[in-house]
Amino acid sequence: SDYIVGLTGGIGSGKTTVANLFAELGVTIIDADIIAREVVAPGSAGLQQIVEHFGTEMLNADGTLNRAKLRETVFAAAEERRWLNQLLHPMIRQRMLAQAQAATSPYAIMVVPLLFENGLECLVNHTLVIDIGKDTQIWRTIDRDHVSKTQVINIIDSQISREQRLAKADDVINNEGDVESLKSQILALHNNYLKQSEKAQ
Ligand code: ATP
Image 1 (tube, protein in one colour):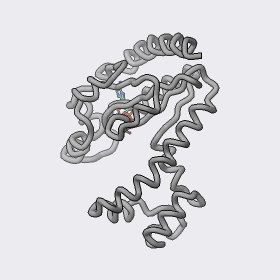
Image 2 (cartoon, rainbow, N blue to C red; image 1 turned 180 degrees about the vertical axis):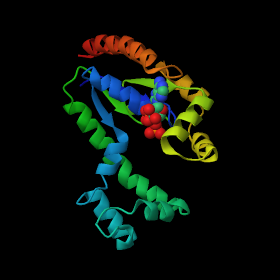
Image 3 (cartoon, rainbow, N blue to C red; image 1 turned 90 degrees about the vertical axis):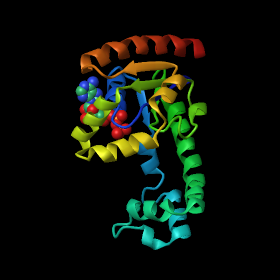
Image 4 (cartoon, protein in one colour; image 1 turned 30 degrees about the horizontal axis):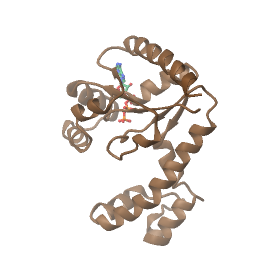
């Protein structure tokens, strides 16, 4: 695809739900979270470099990355965090762009939870934000993840604010309603993106 829509929104806003509905319309979905796992999968260059840098204590017994250990190691060390980001971010970008280029649908959607936080707007032609009120966001996340309200609020506070996210959006989906309301908003956007992607040809 030559036309890429970046889908973003806060924790529990409905990114996966919305992406699945676009996929039902035949749109290729590129998921940054999946790619972020692939670049450190067993046998990857990413994992090899992490082990060379931090040692084999970063591995679980089955050879997969010990994420908790890595998180703990870079949490307190800004220099190490920077090293890790400089290793992984280019790999993730490259893979996302390769998948977008390979996509055969008229346009593709990149699901990037931290699109604005990580300054990744340059990867996409258009941004689509899922908007949701804080209370609904908190309750849906608690319902799904069985976490405490404090945990959810901490994550929300670590992300870009709702106002800033909306200010950066080219399009907005309101996800306060039911799935039927989502579907009709998505259908309208889909028709728009088909037109845009034709122009981009
Ligand atoms: P995260 O960033 O945390 O992975 P997400 O943005 O992908 O979250 P989803 O997992 O799609 O969000 O949605 C969060 C929860 O809210 C899920 O349990 C989902 O089923 C539910 N949900 C999403 N949209 C609606 C809706 N319109 N009505 C009711 N429940 C919804």
